[in-house]
Image 1 (tube, helix red, strand yellow):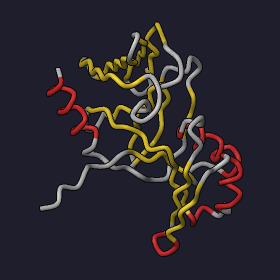
Image 2 (cartoon, rainbow, N blue to C red; image 1 turned 30 degrees about the horizontal axis):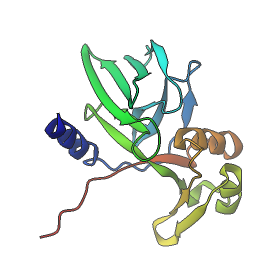
Image 3 (cartoon, rainbow, N blue to C red; image 1 turned 120 degrees about the horizontal axis):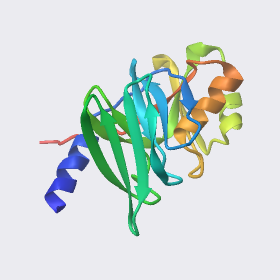
Length: 181
């Protein structure tokens, strides 16, 4: 079991995606579709359990989350295959997305990427989401806005999109760990 979790964690760390995207919230809160890196990912709810599967028929997905005493279990069905992941109930690692291209789960970072070319002032975006920090990469054309712990990154992108337009902000996913030799 420990080795399986280690392998799953390594797979989670193999992907870093940061691109402009809009997000939409589904009605039951079990899963949300967010665009990242030019493709859609499925953000799974860390906040409340969903007993019934939330079909995302337009994207060909069904997602379900439920809680045990110590962890949250996420199940995604996609193209006839079922994928499962377990996360902590809260804190680090409790927020994940399913990437259908790589067919794996990836942890969300507690920040969003804001495109500087979008025309929206970064300070106004930071105020909109209650940011706890901002790092601007002027020469690269984007900024990273650190979010408070109680705000889900997909919800932050939705807020920014409704206030400043779609494509200004996107979720950030945890990237691969670098092994130095």
